[in-house]
Image 1 (tube, one colour):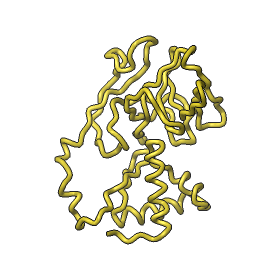
Image 2: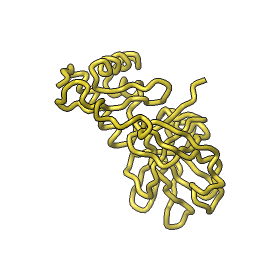
Image 3: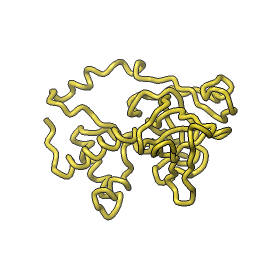
Image 4: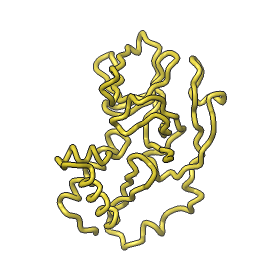
Length: 217
């Protein structure tokens, strides 16, 4: 069993809770804010220590690139020996571009490209990638041009980041439902929440965000 400090255990639990509740690991800034660190650099130092101890994997070049590893009592290297062949870990995901109103989001005319990606990057196996447009989710680490991995679903829990269709628009927001009303919450104070009534508005929940890819230039 890997020996962690109390602070490392706290950060590991924070990562686990974030993935369970929202589908995403936290950003360095979110860890720092939650634990009262002065800067994200302190969070980064703890993450690097957790990676050295084999508790997590850090994936360079991807936003929120933190992946939990099995911390059971197996001998070192046991989990690696049980991994499938790398070719079996690849997903072939369609990239959805502009979506025409009234047609399924995965209709062939919406598919701009396909990507082969490592399934271990995601908290759950996604069904498609959506190119993010705009900065309304900036403070959640989701930026214009990012590729959001989405798992098809017509239901969500409060606090999850979702992809929704409202009329002609497809949007990425944080989900909150109260009674019959749904609020789609931005993560940027420059944007206003969107309020919809599913009984009257042209609204569809298309899926849950389960990961993010970013092209670093």
